[in-house]
Length: 145
Image 1 (cartoon, rainbow, N blue to C red):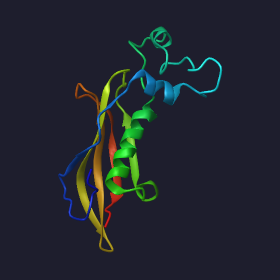
Image 2: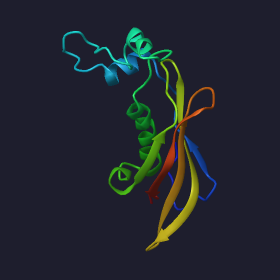
Image 3: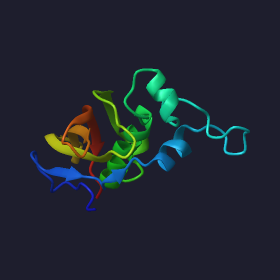
């Protein structure tokens, strides 16, 4: 994936890689200590029966798990410096169920300049295979040289 540079413009759109939220991903992220007894921990993210007892159709991914896909897209676009110079403000708008496929997206909504360095404001979202937005918000970053 190409990084954002000073040549990018408002209206440019970017997408991360599609990721299937298989049970193994949910277990790894939300299952607790690998060496612990009873792994994975039983919760709405790792156990179908536990999730159904709480009114869910199936197990769901932790919100911070697919938020991490958006962070990965920001690092891909702005480089590792995004971790210290970028921002992200998001909210979760729907569940990500086991076996959903999610993709992080970003749209440049504004380009700014500060001391000759291009900065960007982005509309960001993660959507599932049905086109439903499960995370929405904004992010900022500074162009790489």
